[in-house]
Amino acid sequence: MTTVALAACISRFARFLAVMAMLVLGAPAVSAPHDRALHQGVATCAGSTCHGRQEATGPRVRQNEVLTWSNPASLTGVHSRAWKVLNEPRAQAIGKRLGIANVAASAECINCHGDPAPVRGPKWQQSDGVGCEACHGGSVNWLASHASVKASHADNMAKGMWAMNNPAVRAGVCLDCHFGSDKPGQFVFHRIMAAGHPRVAFELDLFTSLQSHHDEDADYRARKGVAGGVKTWAVGQALAVERALSLLPAASGSVTGPDYYFFDCRSCHRTFSDDPAAPLVARSNGWRPIPPGQPVWNDEQMIMLVAAARVAAPDLARSLESQSRAFHAALGGDRAGAMKAAATLKATAANLAKRFAGASFDRAQTFALIDAVLAANAGAYTDYQGGAQAVMAADTLLNALVAAGQVDRGAALALRPDLDRAYALARDANRWDALAFRAALGQIAARARALK
Image (tube, rainbow, N blue to C red):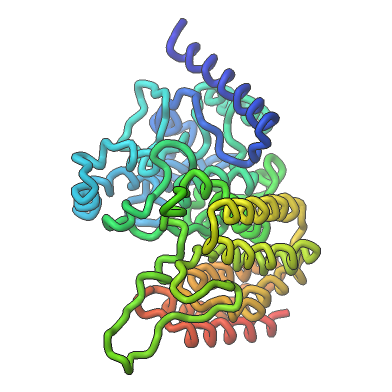
């Protein structure tokens, strides 16, 4: 049996096991699968008749996607540069602190900074970084038919290509590296962050826009459908909460508790002084019924999820809020209580993801979401990470209104200075000013209402 044929058999068997696991264990179908298909490398996608043109002149798709993906001077090229950064001084210093001799070859690093392909073809290269198949799945079974004239999206999916047009599937794939997963080398433990790794953040629609290498035109809509920015944002927030709570039990010790990666960095890393006249920098937050000094779970996605639920699933919003508070409180108690509270909250988040996936998110709802995030949630933005998530949400939701033709582009651009001011206030966590930030959000909310 050839290597390709063997890989195809392995892939089919793996998919069978994955389906059985979902039926038996109730695993969420939206999680990124454990990919067992042979990965053939970016070079197999880069022909001039496929995705390797120098200009976007393709009749159905641009066909210059590899050029966009590999752009060395743009955010669209960061996936292609992901492995290369492991050879830079900062990454080398992190490796030295962790006792890793070569971070560019360590599974603990390359499984997110590269393509963690278990089976690799002759054209596969580690230096490709996060290549095509890291996001679309190993191509051995679907590459040929994908390139044929009669190919259909449904046929490609049936042969193993991942349905990245589906926000839930996309979230599952992106969260593997942009939050963490149970797969080897795909969780940034607190010890890695303490060694110098930057804070990990996630917002599905904004990150999708920054990485966009295709046009969602009429042809794309006909073949795959377009979820839209609001739905992508809402589903991403719900599944980010669900993912964190799914990983919590495995990353929780009976003595030390959850890994500190799960907590809001700034709830511990604050400035302090022995001067008795120095004011306290801890900030009370009515959303978290916890005593002073208890580390705060990073609830940036929970705060967004509450806003989305109030608008798109009001029947679940009150339960979500009470469950969120109960979960925060339970983390200061016994492990069994915390795991029970986490399981309850996780189920609600997963339910909300399904509700959002089936929602239409019309113009009125989008405006309501903007108000819920910026105004109704204002009291929740005591900390940097929640604030950073809020300004990304405002940007995403306003862009969605423009993209759907529901708000004049010129009128929306008038809000750009206010958005830029909020971004500037959320740029440096060490200079976080909650009052100034909330005032900036209030200004955006007022101007957004004027667009209705």
